[in-house]
Length: 158
Image 1 (tube, rainbow, N blue to C red):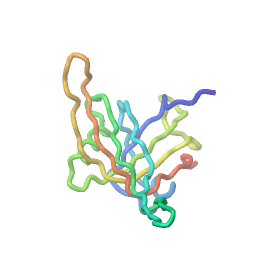
Image 2 (image 1 turned 135 degrees about the vertical axis):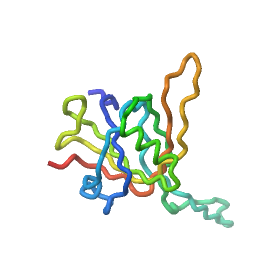
Image 3 (image 1 turned 90 degrees about the vertical axis):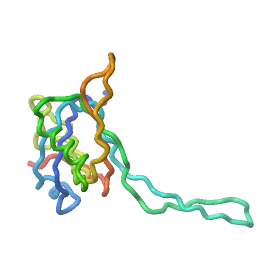
Image 4 (image 1 turned 180 degrees about the vertical axis):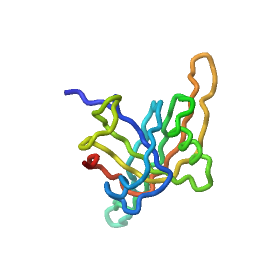
């Protein structure tokens, strides 16, 4: 069976969870950001610490500190959409506090249902940019998202 991202939805909350787990994230107030074109790339990267060895002439590496991925999400403009309004506001806010929930919903119009697969992340929204207008573009925008903790995966609780 081919798997793709068709039907996934993105939801935003303008707060961080009390705990970085499914229960903590589900306690937040979520609003769908409609018109999503590109989902954020969730995850972490690590710095590499080089350890040279004069005797062998080889430099080995060990894994250093982790940091969240800095990614971009893109949207087509959906007038009056509260999720887009919240995301734009956080991207231009000094603090940019944002949590995201990506759901592979099985309900009507891909609405989340108990048991659906979900990914959660918390971080900073930043760098709001409206799409440049030309004869090939649509009205919309992009916003950056820098993850500040590990991704949480699970299912929507019953």
